[in-house]
Image 1 (cartoon, helix red, strand yellow):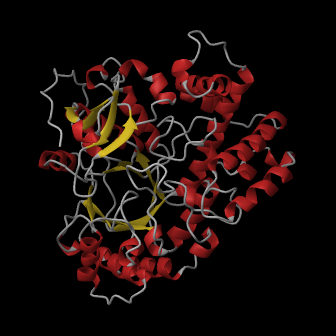
Image 2: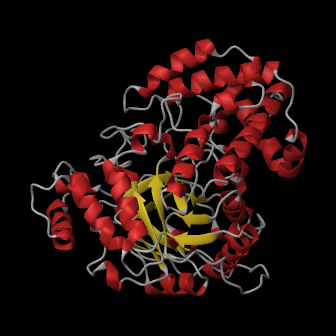
Image 3: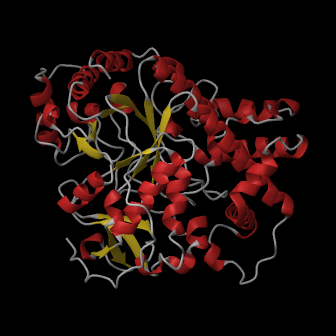
Amino acid sequence: MGATTDDPPSVPEPRLPEEPCHPAPERAWGWAVQLYALRSRESWGVGDFADLRRFARWSRKAGASVVLLNPLGAQTPTLPYQPSPYYASTRRFRNAVYLRVEDVEGAKQVDLAQEREAALPLNTGRLIDYDRVFQLKAAALEKIFRAAPRPRGLASYVARQGRALRTFATFNALCETYGPAWRSWPSTPTAPDPERVAFHEWLQFHLDRQLKRASREIGLITDVPVGFASDGYDAWRWRDSIAPRMRVGAPPDEFFRDGQDWGLPPINPWRLEDARWEPFVDAVRSAGRHAAGIRLDHVMGLFRLFWIPDGMTARQGAYVKYPARPLLSLLANESRRARAFVIGEDLGLVEPIVRRQLKEKGSLSYRLVWFESSEPSTWPPDAVAALGTHDLPTVAGIWTRSEPEHRLHHLREKLVQLTRLPESTPPVDVAVAVYAQLASGRPRMVLASMEDALGVHERPNVPGTVDEFPNWRLALPQTLEEIEEADGVLRIAAHMRAAGR
């Protein structure tokens, strides 16, 4: 593990009231889903905000009160289309592939039969073809944009978003002309076509509208990634605040013995005041829009980040301290502003002071079956109980030994100890038994993974891999319509209700 650097020079702190985050609900439960994987029969190859709205409505009727989503950040509108939600072009604006084309105002005035006919077969395989989805949705949306009148509310939305939306739309239009590698653009690029800028503003308006509709059905928990793509809008916008020739990752631990290199450019902590703290506030404020809760991925990044210099591996990196106190105050301020509670993903090599200060601010902690050695009945109440995360193995992967995990035997023993089930038990039954225990545990919130409820063997992401696994590209094996009647899903919901959640 890399050594911690010396304390940085003090960073001037913004003056904010020392108040906690917005309170989290008591005895709540919900589903953790990857939106792109949640496809209905009407999807165009990827789960979208209309699918989310339907799933949210069904989940609420089944007794859930929240749905945790993967990050929804926009990607650069070029090919190949980036699939990773944790390597987005921006943490502020939304990914256009999540639009339900038919629900865009003006869609009924345009003939979209050709695009729809080409898109529906994309639902037949589990491997999501992001390039094709992007091409078909972009073509259909451009037809609507050219033919339909501008919707009511567009002008006021653009005005409220201000300069950030205009520069984001301009950046996307420039990418369409010069390509996504903005560092190789001409020093003074030609101003883009105003219509292309207006198109990208129009897309964000409809994304915001469709997400708002979904949020009316259930409390959404949105995810704030620890960083953003090195060649995207946020890196372009905050280029004067980024530490040059550095990448963010994690040191070696029990699960990842070579460490992790996430390829994300770190914000220079000494430049945060110059940027008026906006790189952080912008991301949190965006996540709080239409959300009941905000999850901070790798929340330890508010205290320190593991930097890896160019030309070195994750084993050779070092921790750099960040100004935790002002960042936590800003987080609490934005939480109250949005009336959204906070979950801090405090997993891995986390110092006790991190959890202590997060608790003081009212942030929920994480407690995972894979990481804890005690029973859920003994876990702290101000926590989210779950089995794993998007980066960790599923129940089916461990129970059937299909997961290529060096700790497979140890993790399987955890399942045996918790459930006392025989080896011949189907993995969905094992998952139901585990979530039944989580339902009756002490933590105030339980999040059930849809992959576990459906007996999916593959995890959404295997960190440290690029070509070996289809990271962020696997749809769920059942359609949304089938999920609503799936045995494991219904049984987990019944256990949650029976436990008074």
